[in-house]
Amino acid sequence: MHFSLFIISLMSIAPKPNAALFIAGHGSTENPDSSVPYFEHADEIRRRGLFAEVHCIFWKEEPSFREAWYLTDCEEIYVVPDFISEGYFTQDVIPRELELTGPTTLVRGKTIHYCAPVGIHPSMTQLLLRRAQEVAPDVDPAQTSLIVVGHGTNLNANSTKAIKDQCEQLRQTGYAFVLDAYMEEQPFIADWHEYTSTPNVVVVPFFIADGLHSYQDIPVLLGMESEVGAAASQREVFRHNPHELHGRKLYYSSAIGTERLIADVILDQIHDFDQQHLCHS
Amino acid sequence: MTQQQWLESLLSQGFHRMGQIEIRRAPDDSDSFWLCHEDDREILSGQAPPPEHFLVTENPYDARDISTYSAEQEYRFTKGQTNLRGGWLMKVKGTVQLLAALDAFYPACFGLWVAQKRGTLEVQTLRDKLNRQTGMYRFARSISDEGAQALVQQVCGPAHQCAKKILWKIDENTPLDDSEASRFNGISSGLSEPQAIPLLCREACNHFVAECRKASKREFEAKAAASS
Image 1 (cartoon, rainbow over the protein chains, first blue to last red):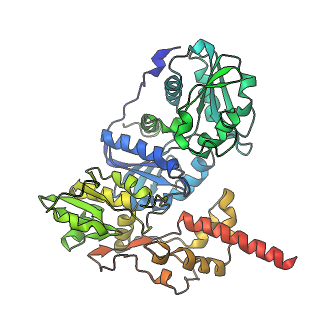
Image 2: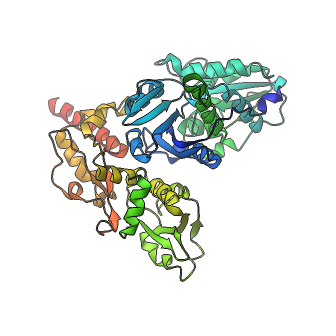
Image 3: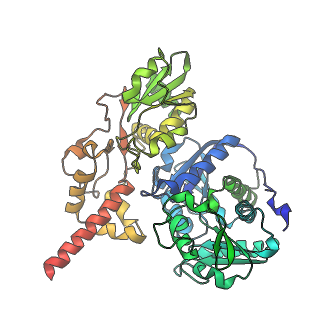
């Protein structure tokens, strides 16, 4: 395995002491765990003192996207969607709710820079590798398949592009086999044992938050749990590696978005935005 | 004036309560502030240390953890709920940290109040909110005006654990029916401005949207049953 990829080679951004950062997430009225990663990413970036203010804004929690204006007096705001792929929320909902018309929009006297979502940044590859190594530190990558699992939907072709792109990069990192698999489209994660032949299999959910999909649905599809509900003990499901299934050792990690270093990917997206659109960072 | 200047001005006029949070200047440092649940406010005198079981923190962002669950371990899905738990003391430095803490307990609420004072607060009707819902919540938009009016009285207001003052209408031409919920002034403590400021509800919350979806479904099923 090329361990050099584990070094989080971050692009530094210049401090923006007069700008605010909005981390845009989905959120939930049902499950408080679903917004924990966003707040942790915000805490991490605040700790570095790069922005005057760092706020989380949500589609399904408070403060809502439309309440974002009332959070800050800063006249320059960077918005980074803490979403795993380009799609309906990043291309339709967030621009509509924030009244954005392009990469940079002047709205109500404020200059809003709209960055790309975290999931499509190349540096996510490093975090996926890091998470795979954390969950199965002693396995030989040459004897191991790495599966990155996403939701998948036949309704939006874009929803799987990010995961396919990440797997393309991961294929160059020393794992015997790398596969993108999905809950609701082919290749189905439920068939993981048919797609893989190595003695070790590592599965990393490509979601921002741990929720019903990573606590319950995917463990059932993998065969770790017999029925939905059995794994409702939440994070407990991630603490019993490896699972002996189909004659293999299966290692299952929590969602990639729960990695605190996603904060660095957020900053990477801001760096890339500045390079591409502003060129004054 | 910036939000911070509004806050400083308000404090100089005696502001000390927002929602269920009591705010006092620290007994030993006039640039710092101590916050606690309004029912625990006797601890703010500083004359005795807080009870041993109290969480004492200097991090304003701990407000999120404090406010996620009620004392009964119920998820507080909207922060305007009147079931904030007690048993904590927060010590913050300056009005920057104080504003951060208030925003973490009551997201955007201070800014909403400032915007109202500035005359820049935009209110969103229920129809506008519902018409932008997609996926499983798309069905919420089918709720009748009568159903929505009834729901306000079943879901909103202090009788249903929400301390926010509703500013929105059903649509531009349809104000809310008069009720305890629609009349509520957003100050659950009963204090007056500027001792306290109201929590403002400029758009129906996502809990209300979810309830609209359920009510809309019930209306649909009732109509189907009546016509069969």
